[in-house]
Length: 302
Image 1: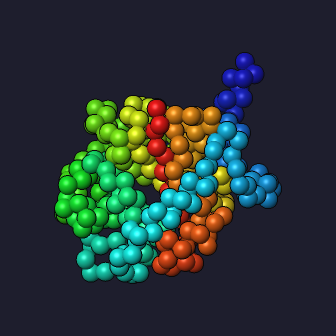
Image 2 (image 1 turned 120 degrees about the vertical axis):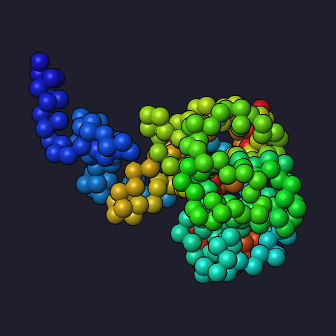
Image 3 (image 1 turned 135 degrees about the vertical axis):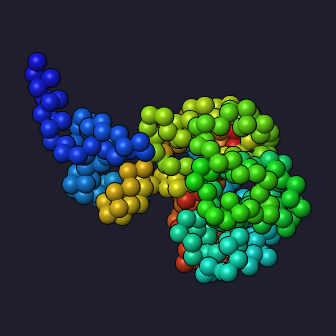
């Protein structure tokens, strides 16, 4: 009876319902920031921010393979020489530009070089936009559109709807509605490029990708996950000022711990913030932005 009364009291604290795609009127059982709520308590994290955002250089149970990452950066340098993207938005909507607010310079230049280096036959992108323009350009310029490049995006930007040379197909579906066989076609050297909702919750795209798609990928398949800041926390201003309660990188970290079936190939945030001079020697444009990357690249070993 006491528990029942407690739940009734907690429900009464929520004056409004959580909005949903279908106008759901399901009330919150616990207030935002409650210890049973997935939403962080701002006062609590402010009080502990020095500890939460302390810089660390390792993660127990995960080998970041720093020497391998530095070697990869050097190997990619020849592939970046002809990059000529504008800083500001050009008239051509199918061209990548640096001052977009979605896919920053270090991640874009790494993708441009990595595609030439790894030479995938197939690439599936989940969550599409400016990164898609980079891949499409590489596909046109260096592969004569022979990479089978599929974009899964339920809410595409207009340039994707209009069509971009170098993109083979646009799948206007939520990824969780796409058949698993679509991903099982990927072979060694192929790429699954993920830029998701970044939120693990009941029925989410993140859960579908981590629990259903990624475990089915063959050895040799490369996986990219965006907006991963490991081994650091999500940016402080995202959490405190903007209220971005994303949690995908926690799932990624748990997935990698003691997981000898996968290698960390590239941790863009980590390398750009800990080894900026080394990384800027490969990605030479806009060196002041070298620490802005957040791409995590993995490869299945077995």
